[in-house]
Amino acid sequence: MKIFKNPNAQLKSKYGQYYIAVLGNIVAVSAEGMADKDAIARYAKDMVDVISGFEGQKWAFLGVLHGSALLTKDGELELQKSIAWRAQHGMALGALVTGETTMEAMVQSQFERIYRNVGLPLGVFSDEDNALAWLAEKGFSQNAAD
Image 1 (cartoon, one colour):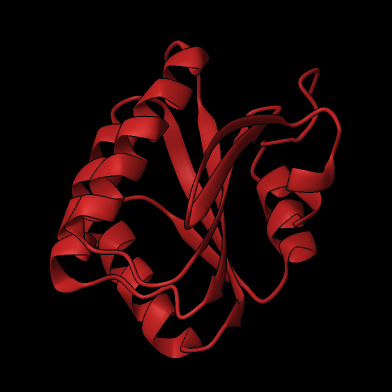
Image 2: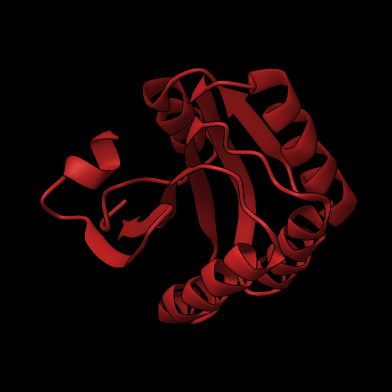
């Protein structure tokens, strides 16, 4: 969780199963455990607050998942609605780190389905370094000046 250890990262929310931080034009989330509709609704509300700081500018999402990190069926639908809203408010793409999940194939399948349904690119990686390198190739950086 390098982005969360960076002293320049602004921790925006910490609610039980997730942390949200912003560094440069990347919004990073570290999450663990199963999430249902109510959990995703709380998370989506926090994301609205965070995203408003970008004022319509393009930004990228970095998700670092741990443990089971599965979504219930209604949680998956709620997250899809949230990501669709984010896409309308500057989110250009997502990078997902699944290397620390216990059900990697299932987690990857859920997120690939969500992003495909929304029409946003998604890169899936086993570690944070590769995800950050991919985001940098796409023009998104942890450095505010980039």
